[in-house]
Amino acid sequence: MSIALWPGSCIASLSTPLCVNASSTQTSDKRFWLTHQYPKCISSRTVLFTSVPKEYLNKGRIYNFFNGSAKNIWIPGDTKELDRIIKERDKVAMKPKKAEVKWVKLCNKERIKYEKKTGAKVEKAATATSDPESENLVAGWIPDDQRPTHRTGSLGLIGKKVDTIKWGRKELKVLIPKAQSSRENTRNTLLFSSNSPPNMMLSLLFKPPLTTAPFKRLVDSPA
Image 1 (tube, rainbow, N blue to C red):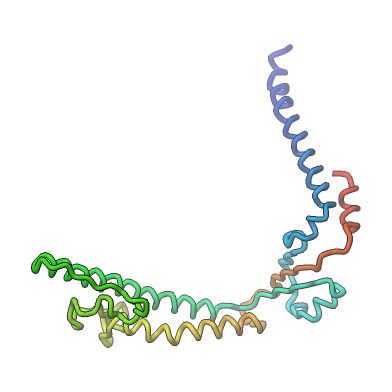
Image 2 (image 1 turned 135 degrees about the vertical axis):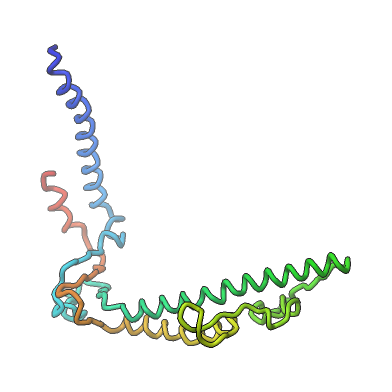
């Protein structure tokens, strides 16, 4: 055999098994499409439309367009306000979390010093009714003026000086319900801003078909 034919022979010997494997995989997929398990898969009945005009983003109109075969319809809206609230909530939540870790470390450090100095083992077991949020498990080891604090102004350099843990819990009592309310409002209402694109995305979950007949044409067609 000529040396010039060796590269072609090598490529042919490598590509032939790949083609056979790909053809076998397609055949297996087509067989699975005809099974009774395939229509039960949510992935087989979910379709993502990536370019839908705004005038069609109405659940009733979409339901009628598909002759009632749609089971669930998901229409995304503008979530900028929800994203802003969630971002603010998470930012606020990190402050008391870090402050509590710092405070517990300081209290534990003082407890260890006390035990070494007095030689007495301090035991403060939590009862079944003890509330970790009450701060009773670590309170008393350091004075209140040494609790973690921060300033509410820009960059934490200016503004009112507050107790970080108490401030964070107070802020979260406002932000958590606010985030939940914004999430429900976004879920139940279509919110589009002037900056929204003319065509939006849409996800549909169709009802299970009563038969696999719609798939037979696809399976019987040549690969």
